[in-house]
Length: 312
Image (cartoon, rainbow, N blue to C red):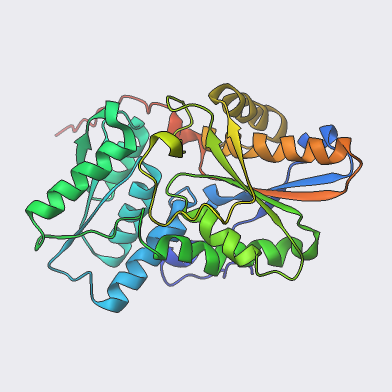
């Protein structure tokens, strides 16, 4: 499952990310292992590289995406970076609809790949971006190819084919729990489907923000949101509701104690995994809990202001 040392394309670097044991957190959970998949090591810096690559691959295979069309989709940031990376690598144009309050780093990264950005109302969040993308496609159906990551089976399909397979290759029969947050829900749906095919039972836990108004960027509070069509509520065995404060505090702890610099959705995932591990440990039950580190922490900092000067 190791990456090759020589790559024909940057897209060959997507996937096969390391599984990191969180030993500092395990001091609180004797007898229970905690692992986190380092998805920030994908070339676009997040777990969304997997879905974007699969969406492009499947659309090109079917002939839905052609050179005369622009791929357009809504995103809160990471999928936009992933679309932009894949589009640049394959030579296809990309337009993104995103809330205007996404981090400046994500805006700048996507533009650096040559992507056009159309901003939606920040007060409407990711749902507002979805509605605006649909409106643009309805107005110009011949101009755009709209994959709609929230309803596209290639999104969970990427994780069924890769993420779940990689986790089982790394921890095999030891894994007892899988935990990840819900955004588009693709990571949870695809990975869980694959893990549920394993010959031993694995409890799969979905993570959602505890409140409709929250600071866990990339995660959706489904009761107050448009529910993605790819979401199957029968797949998760349990849902854990995580507060913004707990997610942010765990992010700080990961930086300080594990030297892992990730974003706040990853913090929420790890907080949920750590909570499960503590509960198992308190009952004297062995376990192996696996979660997802969604992206790098530098996405959440403002970049330096700089100017380029030329001297003639």
